[in-house]
Length: 509
Ligand code: BES
Ligand code: MN
Ligand code: ZN
Image 1 (cartoon, rainbow, N blue to C red):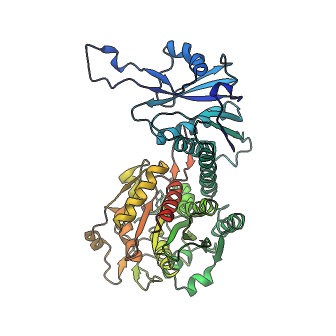
Image 2 (image 1 turned 90 degrees about the vertical axis):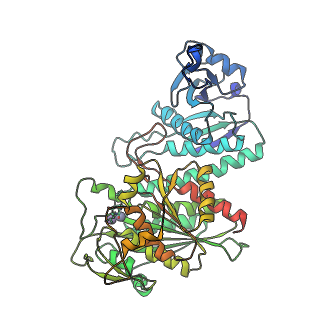
């Protein structure tokens, strides 16, 4: 999708459709009987442009437009506008309106208009308590999210896409243009990740994932090394190998390095991604119902690959290394069995209670290896537990931290990126649950507090290194389509990771 910036008057913009936000400025009804009108919507069209206001005046006066979130009203040949159509897009209550809402509205505009066969449109940035650059950024990022559809293999695929978006805004042109360009990089990278996650496991093996990482790395100027079974064994990655040994499909260890000239030696940010291209559960096999979804068990890895793409193009002044552990988790005559003991790269011994708790095994070696490669700060992303879905549903991802300062920084990045994660605890008491009788640690703490015991397991391998763990099992795949996003891979966490990296670079550690 091409992205253009226009500083013209909205009425002057020649486009297939001009999208304008409509908000409800009514005060909340507090049961005031004296003023029964109080909760009636007070619709306000978010522009100072008199011609746009005039064009919408009748339909607003008619009461048909309420400003309710995602409500759409399409007018054809609006008087006095150069646009062929005017789409009034409800944005909800003015009082709470934020960049978070705007991002989703832009996605909804894309999805509404592409379904009507339009290929281009213009979106007017609202001026409600938002900096113009932030509004522009949210619009472009949200539009990319909305433009993705997963129906690749349908022979009658409509391939409806918006080809060109014009953002209409007022402000400093250079700053606005920079916001457009940066947001496009982030949006394209998020969709790059979603493409990887969307592929079924027969078309996204560990080898193919590595090839895609290599190709991307060559395009954007990143170093990429891909290792196979020999190197995994040579590095004594016993935990990673214990999962990989059961599959005929060769595993890959993908290392992407971003080392800009002039970056300080430290800090080095390490991004570690779970890349299980299919999770059958192994010998502790999963029920067949819904198992097809386990093709997205490499979402954490794909997120790190996409984040590195954005980082390489945005060029923060900070060294960053990404490590992706890619393998299938399969039952076979070579597969590990419950009760087996494995020695991780760090030297810790692990008693395998459940072969379906494989994500933490591959990450254990990934986190340790990242530290060996000199990473001073770690973030991992993984579709790690069903338990995090029980705890937080599909609204928030789970975030765990062994370092409050790093968490605070990430929390700020989440706000800026418009993503939701909820911090979960890591009290020492939980460690009791993953004690083993015969080894240092077990790989499954059972049902209760399952997302936390999984994170406690990882913490054993991050040790003292400041570390964040993002459990995206409930959020990496959107189960039902929403006005702003298709059903399918969401690309969650990428924007926050990129935002974090940029902010971390600016602060010089
Ligand atoms: N990949 C799954 C977690 C998952 C569940 C991802 C639902 C996406 C949606 C993970 O490898 C797994 O199987 N976890 C087990 C751990 C248990 C055996 C301790 C789980 O959550 O049931
Ligand atoms: Mn599993
Ligand atoms: Zn898994």
